[in-house]
Amino acid sequence: MEFEFDEKDYDEESDLDYNKIKENVKSNFPDFDWYSMVLDSNKMEPNIETGCGDELDDLSDIIKDLLTVKWRMENTSKNDALWHFELLMRTHSEQHLVDLLKRLKERDE
Image (cartoon, rainbow, N blue to C red):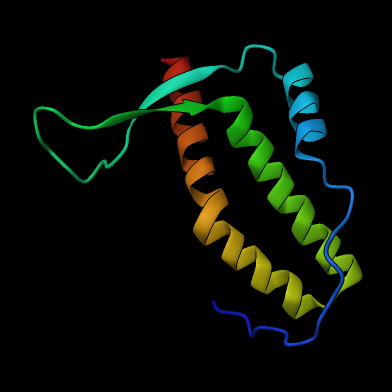
């Protein structure tokens, strides 16, 4: 579902300090750490490119994006908030969510 972009100019959200969010996540999830991941899971070749992920960063980014949407829902318009939710999810949070869920599932195995 696509939401119509709200053309009105709004103030930017304030007081969404990523570092404070990350410290809170760290205090609640002290075992969260770095992990390795395949950068392009659609490639099937012997020397696949890998990268590093960070469970703390993944969850902190997801929380920050959701707090941004919450702030917009309370301080702008419903269309503005939902448009930003769709944008943030598609371009940012979705991959963090997939990576974090995959990592947490692997921990339990």
